[in-house]
Length: 95
Image 1 (cartoon, rainbow, N blue to C red):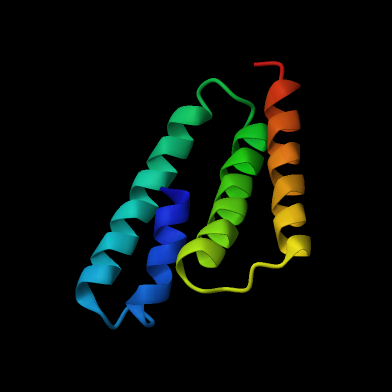
Image 2 (spheres, rainbow, N blue to C red):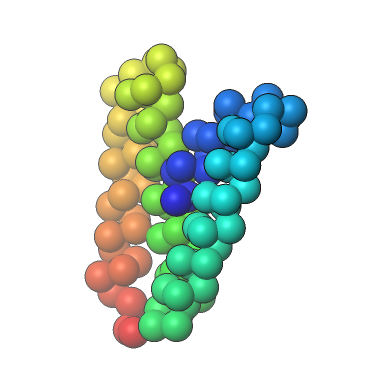
């Protein structure tokens, strides 16, 4: 949901388009709800870092795959680093 609302935000045109805005606000709310479920069993720092990391990496990848943004190897490598950090945080979390 984090990726869905971030990509959807592009199509709202500053929340001037009704249905893209409804979609974006709905997925934002669902994304935060799902984060609230995650913090039941994960430390807040880990949960929030994973949540934002997935959003950042996924949105960057979606931009390259679906929105015609440049696909540069350095960007792909940086996305990999974000994903490695997410995996490390989750792997070494004590909850």
